[in-house]
Image 1: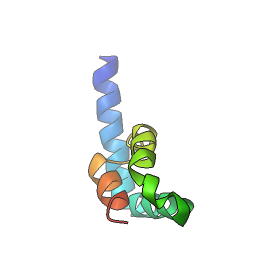
Image 2: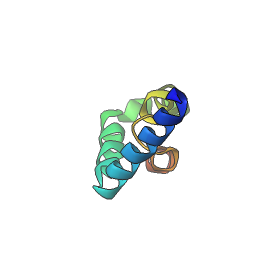
Image 3: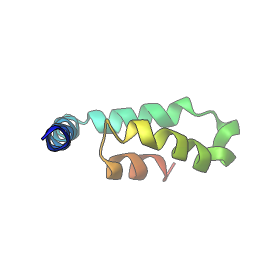
Image 4: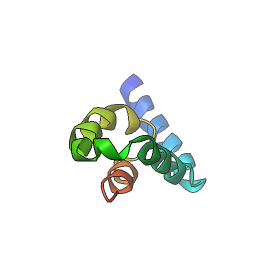
Length: 69
């Protein structure tokens, strides 16, 4: 029951963030924090930050928001 409740809560939280354009703002903030000199290391940074940030936003929003940059 606890795991199922967490899955539903995460879905609700993601839906709320997606409806308010907060996910776009979070992705843009993450991208602007990365200096140009770390550009070649973007795959490593994406891998490290994907675990915590995909708890706050959907996987699609994170990866499609970060990777095109």
